[in-house]
Length: 285
Length: 137
Image (cartoon, rainbow over all chains, first blue to last red):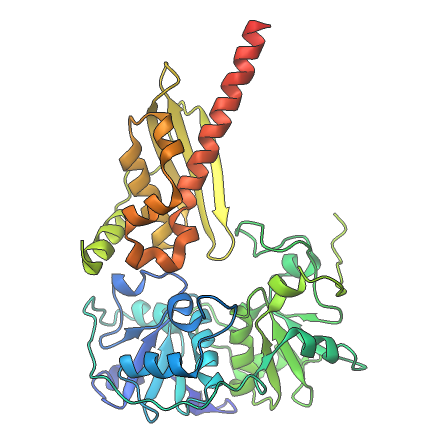
């Protein structure tokens, strides 16, 4: 993993196994499946759920500073804690939680390379015991939505550039407009199919190996730079609601070291339904 | 039940689903699904000869633990029940049955099977009405 631009942001399963009892390390499992953690998790890991914990219950937005401080304090996480995220589906939701933590500037956040699947594949220990850590004090700044998050108006401004750089990380079928969601997923949720004009389609999971680990730096550079997504660009990534694109945001920002990458979490569920904005649709069926 | 009991109950149904599989002679095979979590459930409904009671109810599906456990619990709960019970069973009651404290953040998953079953019952009734109309005609 030393090859990556920020190698310290990834840890492997052996590192996690060596730090199971490290009081300065908190393992956080974030999954799509809300009960997966309860079927067994890495000893000492706590669960953070993207709906219940990270989303605002009323406004389509993330939790605010006060709730973030309460959440982390209740989980026994302080400002100096090394937080290691892992989860199902190639760490898809782990990178999403990582991204939200970075909106509040949490300093030491990392990802377990290969996630839950690799830990299990190696036959490592799982437990159903839910740990109970002493409440910690966490002091967060106000959420900073400027650096790594993009809103629709910013995307529209972005489109005024001569060559706007957008990465649509959804499946080719969603990108073309043939489908409104991933293949095998029910097709509903947006009025129109297609993509934001000028976007390049690089499905998020192409950044992962079969075992859930990230591809090598050379492979990732070929994947993204081959489609014009280069480090000199101002890049915006999107999907349906910003979860898959958080994975791509993580890859570009931390593994390849791109200095300016934002995640448009409004994504296609906003853009595909919004009045007065253009789309491109290549599917002619 | 406390929270852990609810989780254990859901996981029991998820890991050992009841009435899982196809149902021979089903009157209705109704697919259903939700986009945000990738859950798919197909309901197999067989109605008795009176047209009033569920004779058989089974499901197949893939997806998260809540959606699949809910389908199993629903199928177990409604074997032999009158079709009107399906009409009466509201989503809020289903969520309470599963354990609101645990499934409240995945309500769409929790109610997928019920919504699909309601669609299956509606489909059955329409088919019966068409058949009756043909008979009467």
